[in-house]
Length: 124
Length: 315
Image 1 (cartoon, rainbow over the protein chains, first blue to last red):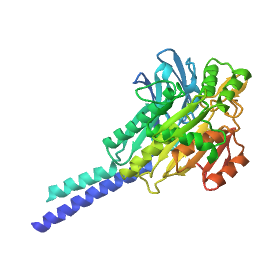
Image 2 (cartoon, helix red, strand yellow; image 1 turned 120 degrees about the vertical axis):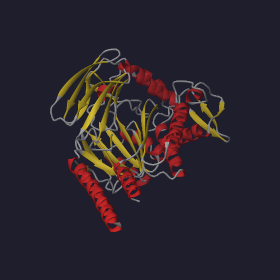
Image 3 (cartoon, rainbow over the protein chains, first blue to last red; image 1 turned 90 degrees about the vertical axis):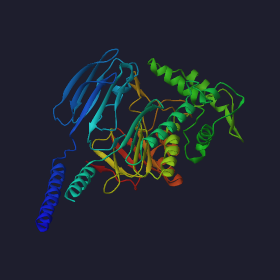
């Protein structure tokens, strides 16, 4: 009886380890460094999610607090192309593709934050 | 027994799959500072936020805030007793010209404001206005006395914009060392970054360049300071004006598009990256030798120079 119990325990442990190993291998193999999403916020509310893993270019027009922003997806990156803000800091940021680099248009209360795994930890 | 083994295995497996970071985003120094700690707890985050907020208040030259800060100092020529950190920051900034920062002058406050206000209205200040500010700078000075007393002599205003974030990162690094936290990334709006060791095989963080396609470097346990004219430049009549002002001739023209400095002191990296925007590559090479820093110089979308100790990689 004890031998049978021990054998079952070993089988259980081995099965769990096998499942864990397979999961890790699958996670590693399917990990895509360009699989990330840009979330566009207006006053802290998400108004659009842009899939940056897509190879296709895309244009998005967002109503900010004081005007419309033209946002473009290109080559796995995102940028504000046009904004009515006075300083144009958001436009001058250019294309961003790092999770650590948000684009902020304070004038229009719009922020673009990239979630997920980007190529680099930081972009400068 | 079986239940115990199964529970332990499940917990171990789940813990192994999860990666917990303490993160926070703080608005200070006119930008968002991202704090990521792969070790430590919420109290550590709170402490770092407090360091940032305090130094942001001290270095503010536009608003009074609730303590004696740069704004207060710019309103008087009297002796003023200030916070130890403000005293140190101003002293380091003022004496940095002796450390290779030829084009860094903390008394450029009113000159910078003149340019900022003019460019905001898409105007270029007249040479007469610029000369007036340069005269103020050359006839002004700072006196440092015991007990953290500072006296501003003359009309030129103090501006710590080119040093405050780096200095704050120095204080954060001191704190993290005292707490024995080794894995962290503090991103001060890209221009000032403090990196510890990443929780990865080699411990390196990767830093990409938005001006240079696919290029990146691997760094750890250092400060990375960047000055770039890209984000805040203004084009008027096809002429590009930078927000980084040359304190010698009062112009808004820079020799380089961006300069990255890798150093072991945040304040020094920040000061040098600003100053080196006006130096030629040959001058930068000599400064690297004299002052033990590593730089990357970017011009026209290309890395035109990097220190031999920095390996620039491609994705």
